[in-house]
Image 1 (cartoon, rainbow, N blue to C red):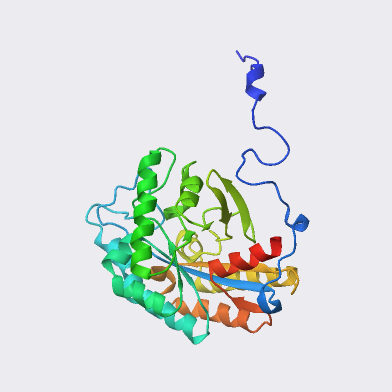
Image 2 (cartoon, rainbow, N blue to C red):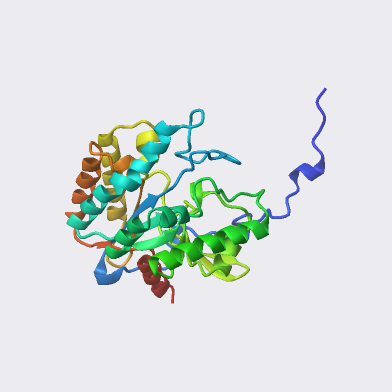
Length: 310
């Protein structure tokens, strides 16, 4: 026999116009100040490779992140494929971007800086910005993580990457984009200026934390080689076409007075394969045929966005 719902079922303390939290305001893009990129560019092209380390004996708690080990220990098949990205694929990607005069913001697990210092040195030598990508792909930030432990993870990650890169490292991408409710506060406290975990916009926006402002950057989960090629099992032609379609729409929506961000999330163990890199090259060549494409790092994009808010 069915029972009527109690009145308390419809009571929600945060029910109001806008968002159900205080991190940021409801802000439809047509109502915001237009953002003019440097040199009258229409598109800020932001390429973000990720250098990850997946432990062979990873616990996969509280969930397995994308790219995690899949079979019984020792899963050497998947472990060595991920390692291909740090040994081979990233250098192929470096060549692709350098030949086109493109910069990048590389998201790096702290474990990569420890295990492959020459790789991080090569990224810095190209002028790439280093973004923190957590300790490794088996240290996931989540709601069950104690605040003190998460604070220590963030501090250790930033200390290792700042020392190894010689950069301030003010950008953050959580492993698997997973956060706790405390993550934005702890990042801001640690001197991080922007975070790549929130995927609800085509432009940066300001977030509130107890330590001041933090900014969300438009780092996509769908304009992502892993999502398209591995998770969704699409072809390399599909990947190229998706990048081109994304760019073409953003280009139509933009103008020299009102720019957009074209962000591309890459994993060298995926796109760095010989048979796949050509799809990325074709997409980039299409974008670069257009006037007003500005190759930028995350920090450069955020700086230009901030200037437009004054």
